[in-house]
Image 1 (cartoon, one colour):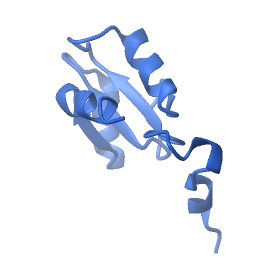
Image 2 (cartoon, one colour; image 1 turned 120 degrees about the horizontal axis):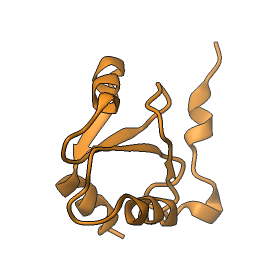
Image 3 (cartoon, helix red, strand yellow; image 1 turned 180 degrees about the vertical axis):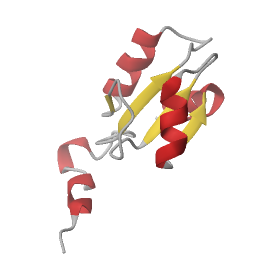
Image 4 (cartoon, helix red, strand yellow; image 1 turned 90 degrees about the vertical axis):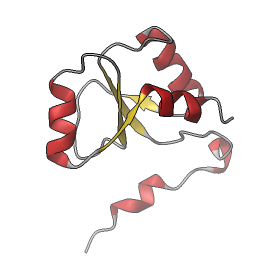
Length: 93
C-alpha cells in the first residue's frame, strides 16, 4: 500500500526546528499570549497553523472556552494539549 509517513521526514534544512512539518490547530483563548503571537511562534519553530481539524492535524492547542474544534479533535482521535503544555513545547528550543 501507500506510505504517507514519508512526508513527515524532516528535511536537513529544518531539522533543528522543533515543530517542523507539524500541523497545529488552536482553539479557545490563550491566557499567556495572543493567537497571533502563538501562530508566529509555531511558524518560527517550523509548524503550520491550520484553521480546521482534520485527520492530518498533529495536535490541537486547547485554550479557555474551546469551541467545536475540540469536539472534532476528540472525534478524530487527534492529540490535544493545554496551554501549559504548549508553553513547555515552545520554550524547549
